[in-house]
Length: 321
Ligand code: ATP
Image (spheres, rainbow, N blue to C red):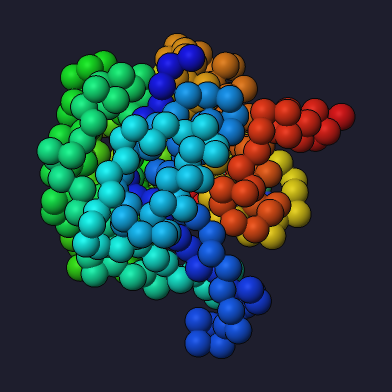
């Protein structure tokens, strides 16, 4: 199979052992490996695909622990760098009473922000069939330049570019800056996935309809996806559009559902880009991706909850009977 290379941050989320409490009230925290681009790479590998993660970790116990997690999950670490000075990033995560997640980050700066263009493993990046990234790596230099260079090299070598902005507002100097920077690379990507919240944020519209989604369309784009949590997803191509329902599951923690969804889809597209032009096969791939997203909500944490192919197929089979 073809290689999916995912670029960006990998970090440790500290999740309260008790849910529904503030950070100050939390009696203790569990450490959960995270970072959306790393989750996507692991999702691809868990489903049997070939994946690599490109990014920088601290040369500390947490950094080496994360590198070990990539390895145990079959993700190539050939694109990893380690910073001697800065620490692996940490994020403390709380679930507010309305179900929204709140993040408090420790990055001043963290190792992921210090990846330089010179440190990139260009051979690895040029061997990608799909190159995936988010927007957190655009926030500061030198990582921003590394991100832009990696994207350009992957593109030149013929990779399909996939973008999940993965908005984390507290990390940006301002909302305007976030919107501007996220949109600055918008027209490079051929596959873009946004959540309903991100669609609202980027368009400024409070109605989530086809017109709002299509206002984000650009001429290089092959597939635009809007994920809607337990309402499934919507898809847009230049020739067709539609929606695919979610699976019914008992959700306990939605962390990583979007990354699982993206990884599942990219794992399908990487070996056959023609899925993007064939609506019935695209719907089949999105059904699989929805199943993977749904399963990821049924266990705590992102990475431990990423499914295998047989778990996903079992949910699809169970739901259609
Ligand atoms: P993340 O929380 O990782 O940022 P996201 O907001 O990008 O995720 P979601 O819309 O939450 O993405 O989830 C992605 C997909 O996972 C959905 O399109 C859906 O198929 C599935 N999913 C998410 N939440 C649920 C749920 N509660 N029940 C069933 N399926 C779900």
